[in-house]
Image (tube, rainbow, N blue to C red):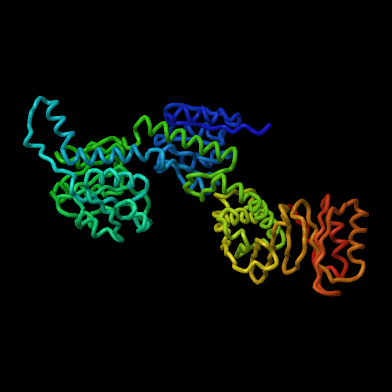
Length: 531
């Protein structure tokens, strides 16, 4: 029976998603409604293969160090600031989020704040609650025929744009990754830099992830470029708007109003400079706080955790490229071949490798070859650092000073498809290549020698001068030591030249056998490779 995966679900993740996990029969779930402080998490995390959190529990570097079994952390939501992604990657742990589950909820909340800001709805409500009937103090502005600037046109920004167009607004957008054709189909005006958007927008909303590049994208300089009387909304991440600069701009009147659902420090301190001002609207990080959104992200993250633990499918990962189920089905044979080629070349080459290049030719070029390259890295590093995965392999390689790359070659040569792995170690170069004969993986080249070898089990690889009887002598010698030859592949360019023999053995020869073989002056090198 397959092993049971253990999942720890914290912060009140949707029970529907957790029930779906347990229904697989392969996953056991421990759940609690609240979060865990770091000492509490450290006390239990070693027992789990996966953790699901929302925003309350912080998964720190100490937590990852204490979790040898941990394979994946799922964040039920868009942001993942409470997860140390760097530490996760170092430990080979996949970090996933759920970017689609709260899209509508956050877009609707953004538009709610936009309307509340334009019409002073919270302030008017408070006034009536206090027994007043002050209509003059709460004269607002219409959204129709106003310009909305959207900074960041991902899923949420796109949904906000749809609603704004429905209200008769002109929409300008800034997103360096959005194609102009896509912007036209969304009926928004895409600008290549922030300047025109800032100068022309009556309202501005931000919808970008928090990165070193986006932090403080609205700061003292950019806010000063805004049209006087602009109104700002942030339902994305605290820190996208520099709060110190924002406070000054609101107090000076340059910014006519601001609505914030997120803050640099949550909750904001008692002396927060915007508290008490008449033209601000606050909500306590409610963007994803709808019953539908919480149910949706809980189910979505549970499905992603299930697919990764049970099938190896990666979706919505933030520290490794995604591999969906269809791509995985196509790539699986290539992944296996790539890993074996990496193992093979690591045992042929010197230990200190400087560069690794994976070349693809033939029909394999039509696929996303990134996962195959990472499989090659896994095989290459197995004997150097032990087992690694798709997350940790690239980092470990770079940590060892290995510069790796991949190329797609137009020439197909003698094969319908070919994966070639080349390494350099100082002045030494090695190359191995593999392909498929039907569905069977084969090694077809080793250091310039063309052959047909089975990439499985124990390989005895011998370079020698081609002379009559040498192969028979090797067979007799191995037989004397009760070592059986399963298959044999030979390669030479001409009689008497340098030849290569690859023997698949049922057991590995010991040191005394290898010494006896290499004592022959016509044998240049012998390697025993385990795949």
